[in-house]
Image 1 (tube, one colour):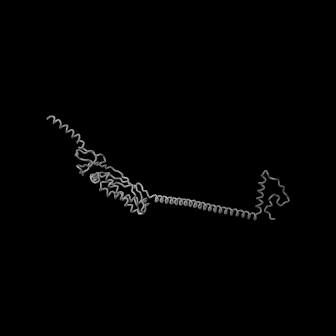
Image 2 (cartoon, helix red, strand yellow):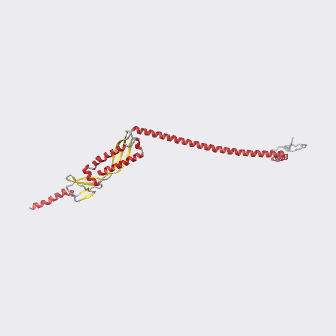
Length: 293
């Protein structure tokens, strides 16, 4: 009897060792736990942290509810039947409250992405491509904004019911068919050449305008100089005429000037001796200037 009583504690200890760890559950940060009992999914998920006590018979599925990014490259046909490669990034997260539905419908978060997110994204991108007339229109800012907004709205509306919250859709890169890319590059080169020609023409026009302005300024300066010279010449002519008129009317004026000249000559060390004719009416040199012949 005592032996039987001694076995009981041992059995209890063994049971606690085996079952004890299953009486509590720790859900990591940023994750959600979904419990199942005999294949039936419990509708209420377990949030991050420790949960105790829990049914030791529960099976567990842990869902990562942190933000993730899915990258996808889709070949999109436009109305001109050309294929354009578009690289996209979808930022999303698993909705914790809907983790039980995801487990029941798809089995895991990864399967939900494969089953719901990827096919929907590809379908929406191709559908949007049908509204694009030409492949090169994908490079238009308005086209990219419309495509991005339409994809984001469509994914949010559809995937929200599937337990996936879409936060943002980003266009990472657009690759046109090679011959279209080459044609666009050639077009850009021609446009750049035209712009260079326009710039050169504008520079030449500016230089010519500057030369014209400089020539006009020089012409005005020359006209002004000529006008000044004309005025000075007229003044000098008037002065000469006035002197000539004064001389013709007054011969004594010349004799007076001659006398002043003789005074200056006499002061010069290199002056010569003049022999005067005493019988002349004007014995002094130069004094006969201005006399009537």
